[in-house]
Amino acid sequence: MSSGPILVIKLGALGDFIQALGPMAAIRAHHPSQSVTLLTSSPFETLALASGLFDKIEIDPRPKALEVGKWLSLRQILKGGQFQRVYDLQTSDRSSWYYRLFFPGARPEWSGIASGCSHPHDNSNRDFMHTIDRQREQLELVGLGDIPDTDLSWAKADLSKFDLAEPFALLFPGGAPHRPAKRWPGSHFNDLARRLSDLGITPVVLGVVSEKSLAKDTLAGIAGGRDLTGQTDLIEIATLAGKAVLAIGNDTGPMHVAASAGCPGIVLFSDASDPKLCAPRGEKVVVIERAPLDALSVDEVLEAASIVASI
Image (tube, rainbow, N blue to C red; front, side, top):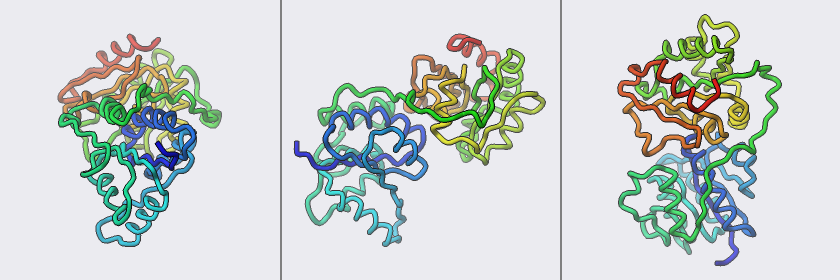
């Protein structure tokens, strides 16, 4: 293999990006003397830089069909990088289309599902595989073995500004707003937070700023609970998870962060998504499935929590 630059493509979403950090580490280890660039979305730039896995980060302008200027900018990133090999860990229609942007001229080696690429992941069952298993198989076909799990134990942030009383548990009552069936009811999260507080554990709600109303409902009537929605970046979430006694949340990206930071976790799944394809993994992670999700009781969640955490 020549020593040309390497490109990794991973655009999102958050959970998928976190699960790809293990494969990214394997790619970095496989190309120790080569420059490795990541093409990603802006929300993941800081975490990617902090990981130390990449020499350069490029932000995908994600052009729409008629945004010619953005397409030209993206083409310049791809062709100007003079990449010897591309690892497409996104493997979407969009990222596969990027393979065509190298025309005319020589195309790099390409691991992915783009038509005509040099190293296709052509397993007809790939769409029915868990994200982690699918990416491991994809890389094994290119000669990469020993793909590690994602490990965010390196993530360290100063948490003093939050002044949290320990022990504390992280709660994630939010999730994709256009998929409400993936959310456990707010009343259940409120009961859970109250019972954690009664156990001497500070309930801490995390999420994006638009989820403040969910945090308010979760912590209603609970003295000492903390609402940190909209106040944490990904590295701070990972650092908090590394210190928390427990994390409980819906099928949402930050639960992947918590699991990869080694936090004992309970992830709640309805039938709106399939944990066999996308659930967070970890030695101390328990997935609970229930359809509908509001049929899942707080007692069941706390019983599962008592198995994986010291509460």
